[in-house]
Image (cartoon, rainbow, N blue to C red; front, side):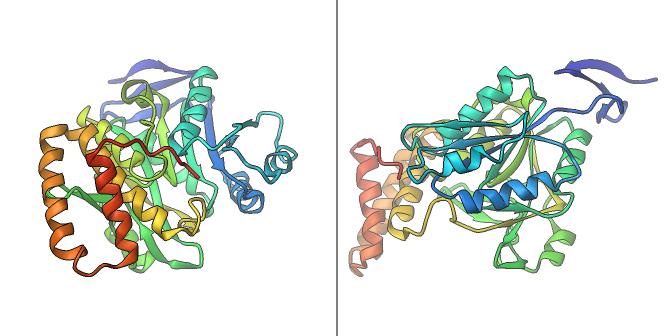
Length: 322
């Protein structure tokens, strides 16, 4: 028949002559949706509702990342028999919270993990389309949907990301463009994916590993994606899958803090992925830019970029996640 069978969790996957994963119809893959939340029961509830409305079935794990408003108790009452809620005593950062979910998915022999931000709502059949894409191509480390703005759902926030090597800065494909246009022109091989919504096979996680910690928020998804691509995997965006993202709904509206984390974590990611030699060249360019362009203007918000660069240069550890 030109195919071979390989065990993948509790069901059998056949690899056909084209290299695609073929699932036996009688066995349904087990998917765990991992939702991290902090003091946002109402917003998380909308996310849960959209997950349960999907045609593709999944179990739910809510990681309550140190909530102090009782939202963990409120959400616990919404759990179904196969769902779970984990509560941390204090906020631990995004990667630490996600890794709790990844470990549970591994321990319970799930086949796929679906990371979903609690500020995300899935459009109809989004998970089904993501599943179809990842089953079709065993080279994929992860597949993500097109993300649109929750308050402007015909406008794209991201359809995968690009990384500019020299400046080590990221950009979003399709940003600000009409959804229909991006669906027609969607890049099939992005360089990184926004982990506000991403489907990952557990077999890939066993090779790439969990998310690296120490970022707090921002750049941990870029880091993981670059690691996976270094191992020969590819990434994809499935244009039929769409989610509505309340951008920065989880991180909160703190522009100075977000700016600090973005610039600090940019340098940390460069060091972890490319090493000190590359990072020293990047630091040199960054300090030149600060001296020539930021200090003369003395804008208050840019002080966070200076502080982030100084903290990284002096190897200070940033510990405040919330």
